[in-house]
Image: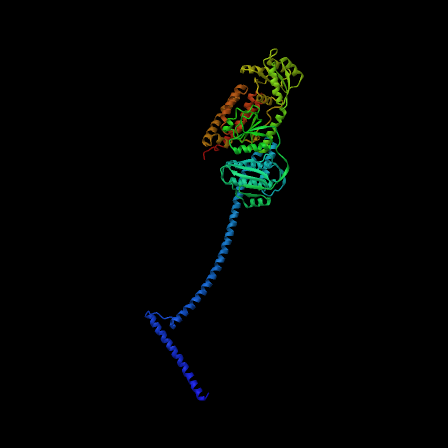
Length: 636
């Protein structure tokens, strides 16, 4: 390119470019001014307008910056929320720990309350038994106290046990607290031939005690039925509340750990505990027949199940014939009132969980709560009496061939060996030569009457039981026969049941074994529950009855002491006092009166002075107790 062209080119470049730039900037400025003027006038800029494009670009850049900042803020907020949630989780965990600790504390408080009530009651019983030298009872109470005071769930010992006995022991321990809460635990065995089992007894009893104690803490009075059975999986206990409320005890952490460590499981009112069957069974044939009297079907099942495990045949039919023992759930029930015409005089009556004292020595108060061990003792005593009086050598005396054949047949069918005598003189000779357990003596015989034959027998044999047989006897005649030495009189024709009853009653061994209620040695001077029950839960009436009794005791005591040597008069005075104390909730005084009245009826001159002294002591004890406890029956 020539130099001139380069010069022109440079001139154009040096002059044209600045001018272009200036013009462009001026045009742009002018265009911007015009655009601003249009905006001021309210006109709309077209999309192609540079100002519009510039503004749109600026807005987009600001939006991008805002979005980026928003994202940063959102990230910061998410991180903050994570930190807050972590703190909340920590707080929730801490709250749960605090709630668990509080629940554990409440559970320990419930446990301590029930434990304290039970231990205090057993402690008082222990002191009383020691003071009264009842060492066997003291050992049993000490065993219960040791089990209560040990640390729960720690003891572990597997051995062979009767599962029903283990349950009963727990019910005895918890009975004081249950009584205060108005709760009654009733066991219903569902198998009549339960064998011994290999079981971790301390763990099982601790778990059961905790479950029952937690139920008491729920303040749900009524009867709880405990049905238990054995299966391939172990022992199964099912709990049902009579009031239809759920049996839903609190399962604390300690209790849950104990269940897990023992291989046990608690689900929906059912406790499954691992056991292994052990050879042997508790059921045995006793030959005894029992009548069960209970209004509640579940109560009948409970009693029948217990008796079946002891080998008794049971019935609920009052008119089913002779029974050896009658077991009564509630002596205040209509069923019990309807029972009186049916059992014979030789039938034992066991009263479960009742506190009314009776004169009949064959009516026995049984501990509350009843235990299988105590029931077994009573049934064993009754079975011993039956065994000793089952087979007898009997002399049957009657001048009538038809009568003597019938009597011989009846006695033989009852399992006895019978020797026949057809006159009073022949009977006298037989008794002199042989050893008989019992004599049935016809009273009206021609050569020598039964009364005269008995009178002569008594000159050399005072202990042989003699029962008179006659077609008719007035009260005066019966008294004459008794004076001649005849122990009892049966009216002809004699029914088999009457024969069986009188033979049972007149046995060589006493038909009245020592079946006293085990709780009698530990009854209190005053029983508040009994007092309120007698007064239909009216505390003001209970207080009035007790105050009337206390006010009249000095006069009653003087009246009986003044006639201490006159037994008929003393008997009337004691009977009057007995009527006064019956409804006042004073079982110890009631017991002392009953013993003295029984001795007076039997003309036991050796025991009467001693029992009179005992009664005076019980009167003094009651008066002193009332003086020290003036507010025990104040209305609250």
